[in-house]
Length: 411
Ligand SMILES: *[C@@H]1O[C@H](CO)[C@@H](O)[C@H](O)[C@H]1NC(C)=O
Ligand SMILES: *[C@@H]1O[C@H](CO)[C@@H](O)[C@H](O)[C@H]1NC(C)=O
Image (cartoon, rainbow, N blue to C red):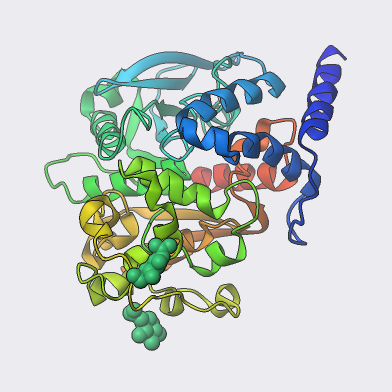
């Protein structure tokens, strides 16, 4: 009852403080819950005052607010041990099922949050666990390792990437697998949003490394962000004003991750950085994110590509990360993609990043990789990891169940 009261109070407060009619697209799962979630997120992302603080400070505040309304208290489960450890010097939270020492499946996970927010335990720093990891550990009888890679703005690309790769190398090592009784044949790299970006980049990098004895069996990418050259894919156009990840936020996260000046935001949003006068972007590179060729008709709808003749040709030179495959895994060559393990790619209809994921799935498939494409017609960005908040949505729970089921059947 106290918890209910607390929850009701939090919800009322959030609604009262930030009630704004939000014209959500019809078809989005449980719009009022999304509105509440958005009210929290937006209050820290949208205001100009907050803008000048940088994403990070807003995020600490956001973390605090989210943890305040969080109903899942810090707890470990009777069946899963939660251990703080490190992988290759990178802090990592381990969820290890109790019991005998028979070999188990293993998942290394990178959390989302624009390379700037979140933590190995989700968005709640007070909570010891991220409910999804407990559930994964229990339902899959798997060891889950959630990596606390460094965050922007203190760390910028390639720091996050390097942390992810370093942690993954140790995860695949014989010593580590033995220490936690993990089956070397049943390993997955996974992550959501910016963590999906890191997971895809890790899968590429380590698939190319012939010195590794042990490889990932699967990659599971949850609404991943994969490219920063086109901010006018149909999903960016369709969902630019859909919570919680508004189109400008994504440009801001990218610029911050790549250590670039935030004043470039309008340039990115105009696709001026990838205009045709930008010679550094070859036709071959453009074809890797050419959505008119890579997306199915039902996603292209009537949207038109935005390709400027003249733009701001200095930008790609000034921000080399835009063209770096370690930051933008969609730019990988087909031969590289073809070496990566079988894939699960979750996408949501009401998400600016939908087409990043759909194009990646298509390119992986073209490269010969087995791909399960799990698309949620009523899904929105972040729905799966917010499955344990008071605003828990049906699509959040459905997506979590299906993700875990895919792992169960394929790992
Ligand atoms: C994208 O693909 C379409 C359809 O195949 C093609 O007509 C167009 O020239 C391509 N654009 C680029 C930039 O590669
Ligand atoms: C995009 O580039 C064009 C041509 O250089 C320029 O006129 C326009 O102001 C630029 N827009 C932005 C937002 O930078």
